[in-house]
Length: 340
Figure 1 (cartoon, rainbow, N blue to C red):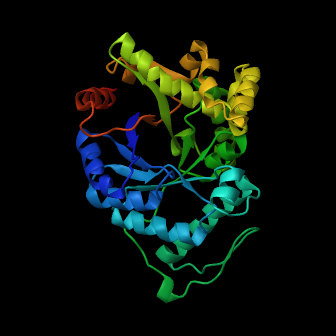
Figure 2 (cartoon, rainbow, N blue to C red; figure 1 turned 90 degrees about the vertical axis):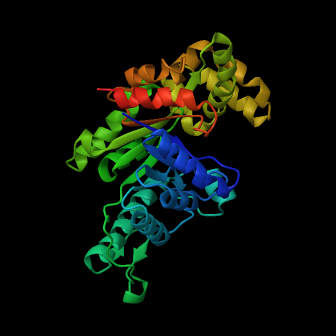
């Protein structure tokens, strides 16, 4: 199991130093989310200022960008990073697509499937000279003159990971993708009973094996070497779990555990903007299901035990920050490196 981190910065000028420090710490991967900055810009900076660590978007929202735009971005980043780049895509939800990005929301699973196929058609044209002739329900790509063709690169097999919670996107990952970003709001039971069976359906449809697809996720962790530290660390985790649990898209996770009534209460509070009341509805039992708690030394072993056979790459939900608890991060990295 690999140990990664995510880059969350206020200013893009912070990225080079953070990326160098993460690589020096021995972390295996650096993921760039789409929150306040474009994840491709962050990935370009990571690629330029590191030499060994894997890097990728986790995730870039697919639909505000055309398949052609995504294909060029990934191609350039694969070349810049000497093949270390992983293209992570997600659909996001209807409200964000329509009201934050101003794009049409339609048939997200089917449309994302076409995005993936269209990008690969472009990559095949650039690498192998294949005539571009992609015709789908949502996209038609038939024009690629030499002036706009970037040509072959040394590492053309760009891994595509997609993110999701529900069965449709899990099946799509199994059918077409190299990896799957598991949403942080999950449980080991949900992975075993919902996520992996749906991924297996897709794998069977494409004649592939589980080893052909990597699962990665950010893990809610409550880290502290004293009880007081763990209590303090649990507060933001409880709050974040409450937020995710209130969101309709993630309802199946709560319902699998029989916590549908709590989810409805959380949704009502969220609709009224009563955010401060929501964490109290997350019981200690729920916290134990959705988060891993322990000392800094204990956490790696507990994470590996919980997710053995389920996840291939993990990251702590809170990011690595150079100069903050470096000695503890060294313990984490060493534990993952020492695993058999």
